[in-house]
Every structure is written in structure tokens, then in C-alpha cells.
Image 1 (cartoon, helix red, strand yellow):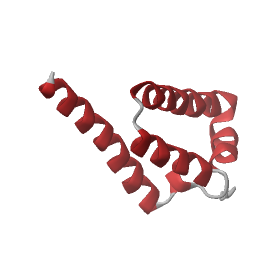
Image 2 (tube, one colour; image 1 turned 90 degrees about the horizontal axis):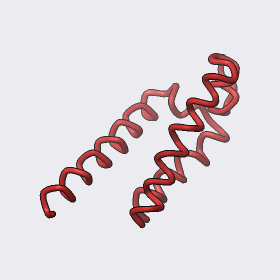
Image 3 (spheres, rainbow, N blue to C red; image 1 turned 120 degrees about the vertical axis):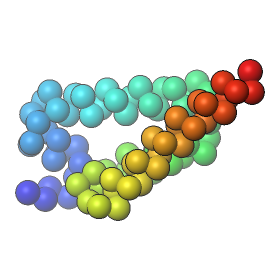
Length: 85
């Protein structure tokens, strides 16, 4: 099934529960990035969310790789910040 919309895909495959988990996780990520004033990663996260409106980026090979690098960069940033403190 290709809905060409990640939000619709999660709603269709996981129901309201799946969509809510998707939205809550992205909400947490966005709030943390805004609190840290991390504009680079906030712009990347915003790009991924807006891309989700027109394509199932998490269902594609490049989307999984992109999201993996995104989360790894968030973890690496936290480690670097911890080491500098």
C-alpha cells in the first residue's frame, strides 16, 4: 500500500494508535530541538516532517538511512555536549 503520505500510512496500517505514537515521537523530538536552539537539526527534522506529507519516506530505503543518520547525529550531539561539560 502506497498512500504517498506518511501520516495516512501510519493511520491506515497502525490505526489511531500508530498515528499517535508517530506524532508524539516527532513532537518530543521537535520540542527538544527547539529547547536546545539546534537550528540545523530542527531544519532537518522539519524537512523530514514536511516530506512526510507527500511521500512515505520511512517506507523507502533512502528514508530509513536518512532517519538513521538523523538519530545517530542526535545521539552524537548529546555525547559531545556531555564530554564538554
